[in-house]
Length: 601
Image (cartoon, rainbow, N blue to C red; front, side, top):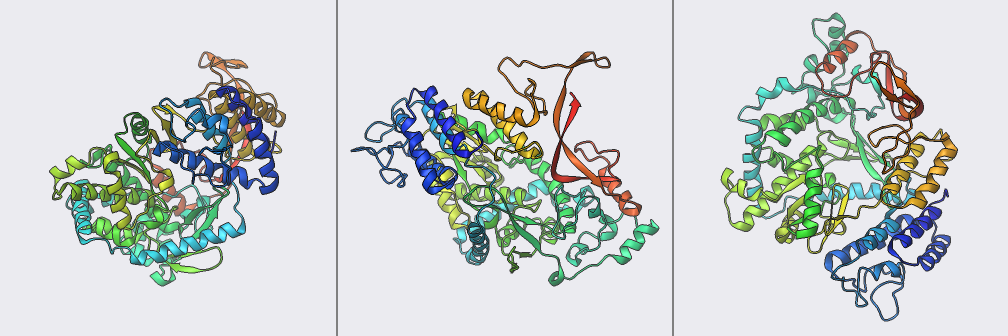
């Protein structure tokens, strides 16, 4: 069972057993259409059927125009495909039943979405389309800002109240709190690992706000550091290294757009992001608990409760980061000019596309910038508060903000807003230049989704996704880890026959795997009984231990000496991240590369 078709057929059989439906005709339909249309039927067409089904759940009726690529039942609105399942949710007229089958809802979504998030390399045509869309969206941003004056004025006033509360009157007081660091991935110059600390370029825009002598070397009193200060290049804005736009596998329909930042910009972006996120999450009077960057359960809990009482809507933004403009961010940060200077000095102004095109960016930043997520979250949050103030006819003030902030929760591009105000808020957001993903936004029925969790009437109907293709050998560590995780997740939702087949496949690649605890990061099988396979006794800690296969990051020789090594050590002191290897100045981890090693757990 290595092909996507075989997995889908097995999922259909398990779903039929759970719901008491005969899936034989559906299996014939899937097999025949895959023969004629290829795997795109599984990765693109089936997910579109699920989207139509979710829209019908939200609206309470299956419209005849939904899922046009599937034939309808004779004299009925419902499609023939998955008829044994949909009849447990909708009646013959297409109207949702008073008590639809939760098992059928879960099964339909599982059948259609099992491989919808498979990491696939898109066709060259789709990649070109994504590149053109990136350029078109950015070019279209020049017309943004033509929003009603009332909304712009309210947005500016709300921003002033919120950001002044966060940062106080003098943002320079926070300058010493900045602790720059490097991210785990590559950079626009192709520099990786420890070499990132050997800065050869420090843009003049960055130098005017964050001097290289303070942030790029350990100490100007260090002779090696002083030499590096004399040798570093400080290019003018027109000579800066642009961000490198690349397209990484996401789904078969479109790739994920990532803008890889230059090393110096990324270094200081991390400093600002690490400093501002805790302030927003826990200390702001108007943001704490409402704008989150680490805790997704806030949004998902509201999605679950709202699928029962319908109190809140779940909104999803489309092309979220690519539609936040420089003008909007500048307006938002007008009341905190020092912080605005920090932010814009680390913003890259140009981008190169894979086809060689160089464009001047009108958007604030794309995914890849450390400031993208916090800035877009605050922009969406303040825009929603502005919309609610205008609707109620209130003047922006700390008191009025406390009234309208209740019921608004933001996690990146996943938004929670009051359901009765959702149409107005959506209209205002789109007028201001943002765009709502209507296919993934819900507020009328009992279906809600937010932060990767989906609910209907309080029941979790989130499907289990296959993220990687079934591997051919154990050298494909990402594939093996994904396969084991996929089998375990199917086991927990009752797809036991499919899970059993996948377990046998995994054990053909890596040998027999033991039973493990759900908290263990090693490869193994989970169970309701929480059974454990043990292989010895730890005398030091007086407890059982197991020798298990663990995915381990691959290190490579990457020595760092002199002032750059001292700079790295200074930056690591007191940083509350994962423990640093004792060999961190000799080796560095190859980001994304894994190997399977046996370890005592």
